[in-house]
Length: 270
Image 1 (cartoon, rainbow, N blue to C red):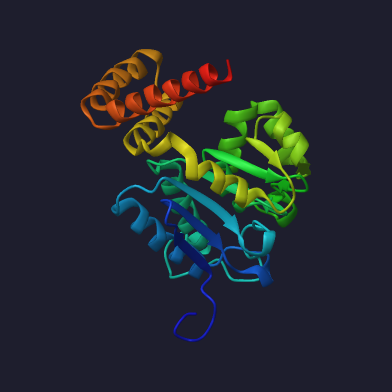
Image 2: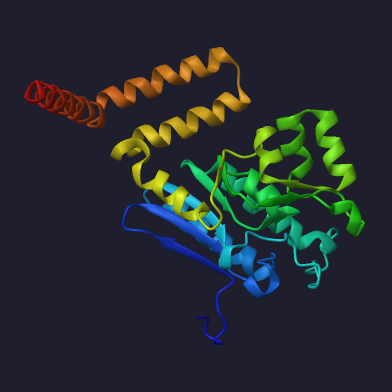
């Protein structure tokens, strides 16, 4: 609880297995974003950015619902700046950019719905695990608004102009099956299992080779922005770093042990 007795609007859990979990925690308001939520999100990212990198980040919403986006019942303005009426959005944009830039794998575990800026936040993650009944939508025009949080950017880059435009201008809702067919999510999981499936991946990702995982995330970031030549150059540097570290010899010995155990088991069967 906060000092005033209210539940915090965002929760950060650092698990024993190294996986970090951020939970949007305004369930009575469908986990919609407020100034307080974005402020707490910023503090959580400060910790993740400044500590030893977590194994993975899982982003979810409380009570099996991701988020309906920005809270239209709360004023979005703050201060007297030139763009004061968009102050809350600007905070959200910063959060989305920081999530995108984290040097660790990130998974949005979507149950229920992800709408508006919350869909943008989910798309900022490396992967989206969606429950079978999950829904996605960008109904900004219905509220007299333009797409925000990078929704137009994410959808256009992923789908191309024609399909992104149809989704944005129609404001229609996509179910999990269509989102998967369009490449907008990584996998569909059973209802109520999105977080559990993400945590399962997080607990095993890289098999303890944390440096290789972090460098792979950085390589994927560069692959999205750069050309093949620049990616090849970065691969050489990262390969050198990995070979010089302790993870490659340890992984090699583990592989040899597994192979020996498999061979022994096969021989005993014979």
